[in-house]
Length: 575
Image (tube, rainbow, N blue to C red; front, side):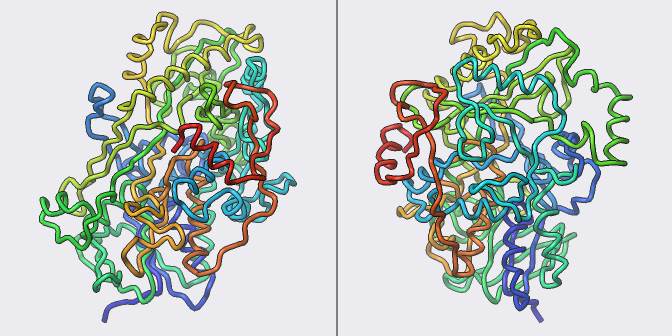
């Protein structure tokens, strides 16, 4: 007899863990979660400061690479994606950023009906647990959110330098004011990584009606007409079929979700037919519209020994590790991204399109190469690049990784914006706050001055911030893949898509928090009952955004007239 479940969830990443938890709140429902990876039990996953280790581990990372990127002289880029319980929330940098409220007004303007700021704010509040008392924050959610504890003076200097350069200060970028320089928050609970697995899936498993199968490679979704009925998966060479009495929720992420749909016969006809896959529906946009955030490291020498460089030796790392293992405190209990900011690249941009992550050490994100001296850096990049890429099948073998190409920097505007990242960052570091500690510029370096020199630095050094999204975008237009009012795959019954692939636009910030929000709201849509929109949902910005690139006064609330705000979004060239 075939085993039957009320819900089958494909993927135990950030979204899948939320879905399993929320749908499992009904004890009458029987839920199966299929995860291609294994357990997330590991000290390197739990320890925030060790984030580079699981990110570079074959156990926790799919090890994906892009196709040669045409806009970057055919560079092949690294694309870490989480493999195992918690998905990418178990290997990411743990930065907790909701995004800007106008992000969700932009989603709505792009056809994501029901996803504007007042609609999504209740779900951000529902998912989080913060210590501060604020009408815009949540205090009882599964995700514990904390601020950094290292108290390195360079973090404060970065915030002060931003203010000296004319940018506003914000007490919290996840509070009423997103724009400006601000302390950062992180996914950390009692000194340990607060992944989606630990925060959502583990509590769900304790109820007894949620079951997880790890090392399960989904081969395809099976249909009866337009009704999704079952899932075929393999484990250790054996093939299994499980039947969905209710629905199937595809939550495999922006790379693997389109792969699974295509293996199931849903995607561009030419691509599927060429691989011998029977076409269930010709759907051109499945795997299209791929977006990401790119970033550069702008690095400087530090004239005083106050950076984290003094802790990069084996003995200091051992002491930090022992302190963390025994007490879950100290430098091992933070991701060290404790200050950052969001600014606009030029006049005429309605809301921030550049993000900063400051780090009090000069080192690569994967931790493999440091500058060999005391230094500090900021990771800076654009948030709404114009370039778009794709995810395509390499073969009809479910075990093969898909082909991925972002087409990074193939739109001319992206070069203008990325040069602005370099220029505006340099200006911040020339402020008085850094005058007593700043030495030579390590990267790009003092010799990098002209546009041509900047462009070459960008081609050579730009890196992904690991925020792919958009490959199964939701919208009401004919070409959109997912219905934003139900989260169903258009044209089908019993099949929902819930992960970062449904985003019609990348948000102004790290993507894990918005992905959790999407899953929280989608779970209610699947149940048939969503929370009412928030009556207090301010959208703060600069009234004079057309005329100026920066202002220390972010005190205009755009929320009173959403129709006019949509017109402003169109005027700012974000549609």
